[in-house]
Image (cartoon, rainbow, N blue to C red):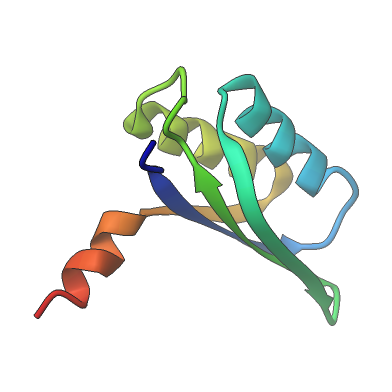
Length: 92
């Protein structure tokens, strides 16, 4: 079964509940976290996630909108990039 991978980046002031909010949303939408890296640098939270949305209950556009809502609520910048963007860039 081929995976459908997305990269999620999260940047903002560090606070409690960031990872919990995002991972809960992903879990509820059947999106599996493949890899995660996070760090706090001088009070700023920085996280990258590689997720598989092959079994997602929600379309990509709605996932993007919902993650942006979570970001606004928590004062974070959350970006979502589909793996196909990076694959196309390196196809030449």
